Amino acid sequence: MSDIVSELDCLFYPKNVAIFGASNKIKIGTMGLLTLIAGGFKGEIYPIHPREDNIMGLTAYHKLSETPKGVDLAIISVPAKNVPEVMEDCVDAGVGACVIFSSNFSEVGEEGKRLEEEVLRVARRGKIRFVGPNCMGITNMDVNLCALMNVSIPKRGNVSVVSQSGTLGTISMLNASAKGVGFNKFVSSGNEADLRMEDFIEYFSQDEGTDVMFAFIEGVRGGRKFLDVSKEATRNKPFIVLKGGSTSSGSRAARSHTGSMAGSDGIYDAIFRQSGIARASDESDMIDLIKGFSKSPLPKGRRVAIYTVGGGFGILAADECEKNGLDVIKLPEDIIEELNQFLPPFWSHGNPIDVTASGAAALGGDESIDERSLKILLESPAIDGIIFMAPTNITSRINRAMSRISVGDIKEMLSTILKTGMLGGALKDQVKKIVELKERYEKPMVGVNLYGESEIEEYKILEEGGIPLYGSTTQAAHVLSKLIEYKEYLDKQKFLSDANI
Image (cartoon, rainbow, N blue to C red; front, side, top):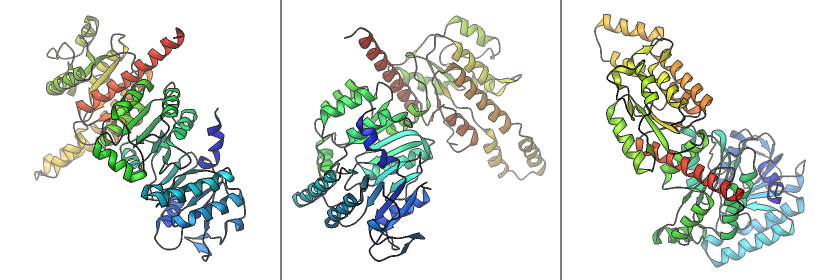
């Protein structure tokens, strides 16, 4: 375990938090306090205010020295010119770590840079590590710590994030949470006067609560360290990066935002490849990759089976697989023979495996057509991963049809069908069994939801069971290819290590 883990213990696992700049008026510091409270932080919260005695129902203290206990973490949201003085107070009180929301530092010019350097000098004198300035905060869902300025409370999970854009990072985290992705820790690194992106990558790589890492990068200050810690991190955990500033316009925007030097995009590409980093192309791809890596096991190879109830889906999926370097294998004869035992004679007899809509409607005893087919594909050593068309819940469509039907007898019949659970119940049982199959065989299964019913319970069961769903075959094939690329990187590193190269 490196020093960075012990150094950041007070930052991520504070027993209490003091916050400067909160009041009973709506302002940035108040939003930070509100997020701490709403997030359910398990420790004590001490608002610090020179005049107030009570802020948002909490006892407020006029000075940091008046708090009943020593403070582990201080959140600072005061005008930039006052931050050095507040940091002096933190040093005198023995505070462990700080998060500085305040802006108007090096990102605005030389005067701000000098002020930032003064804050750093004071902090180093007291051996205080800090995030920022000009940041939006941090989270650690292990202790319900949501120290963010914009009232963002993510879904709990296994993904940890460091972002050089606080707004992009927090909004993307909320967007991904709504799509079933859970987060463990989040850092908006701001100007990185003290703690830098590389420090958090190093920390996350050793953090037990983190299984997948993500970073939004505008520019890296410590290129050598970034390469070293990234290589070490990806030995054990997937690392996804979205890089901004890849054009001259984007580079200028990065410099004006946090003062970051974006650098050559080609150099970054080379660093990412050397380090085994999965590079996202945009915000949507970022969430797709985070979902895939956080939910799915890694495939052993590039051999893919496509399972569908419609020919058009299979054609599109095959196209996308080939574009992404996946091998849509010729279906082995033993698989064809097994499928022939229960599929209708008009199924495709090849890969893509198209059982047709008519075939999928038939149930084979206690097992559905989907379940029996997927089980055979998962059992086969000739197949490394599966892209499949997610089953549909026809119940919602029957409900919509009922609203358009005026004939009483028909409505009564449909209502009876729905009440008995003949349709919805069957699908729910089916997807639970599909999840059980995935857990038994530990092969990646990537689903495509063409129905748009992302909130139905059955799709949530699939995603929570480790089967990510996407809105197109393009997304599904791309994510599966990135999972394979990372597995191939790991295999190559193991080979080089075993050969002592």
